[in-house]
Length: 72
Image 1 (cartoon, rainbow, N blue to C red):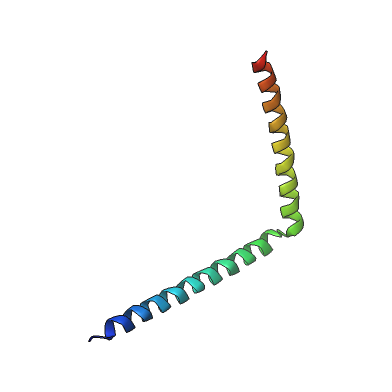
Image 2 (cartoon, rainbow, N blue to C red):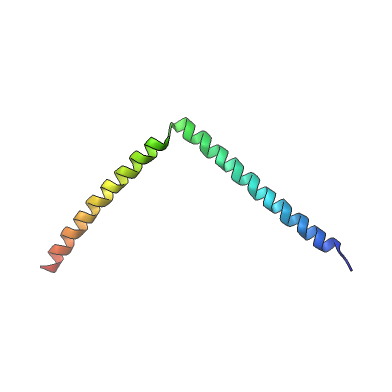
């Protein structure tokens, strides 16, 4: 029986998992650095979310007006 195939496969899987963890960590660190450079904190994200909600509300109003005109 050749057990080296199982061991090689196991090592490949473990190396792949650690590689993915490394990539994830590096991307997370880069994102944190970018947020720091741009001075994006929770308050800026909340402001963006609020503005997005306002725009969506206006779009819904426009859509409702257009629906009512189409119903006439």
